[in-house]
Amino acid sequence: MANGTFKDVRKTVDLTLPSFPESKIELYEDLLFGQMKLVSECKGSDMERGILVLQYLIKDWNFVNEKDEKIEINEETLKSFPLKDFTILMEKANSVFEKYSKKDEESSKKQ
Figure: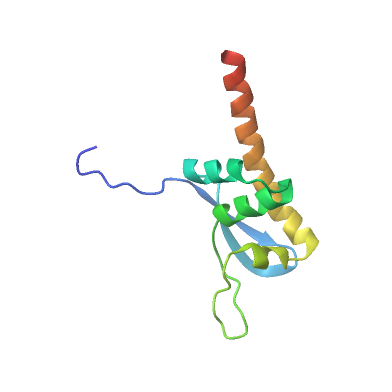
């Protein structure tokens, strides 16, 4: 690819959480190969892997603290969401897992 620009080509979707009607979360629809590799190497529980996936999937959000500073997208912050909102986010992470599981199953059947 001569003189080509390498950039992230993943599509994104926007999400609003029920507890925060003004929220805007921009999520990637997919993981990068290196991110999926790190997730597959994660020795923690499904919940821990899901939180790791969310950290990779969330491109941006509009959550700020009292000083109007953007809140970091990390494990601690994700664990502080109300359960109903966290569940919605985890459904997004699960959909990525399911997509890769189906691809793995299809690849195994072809061999």
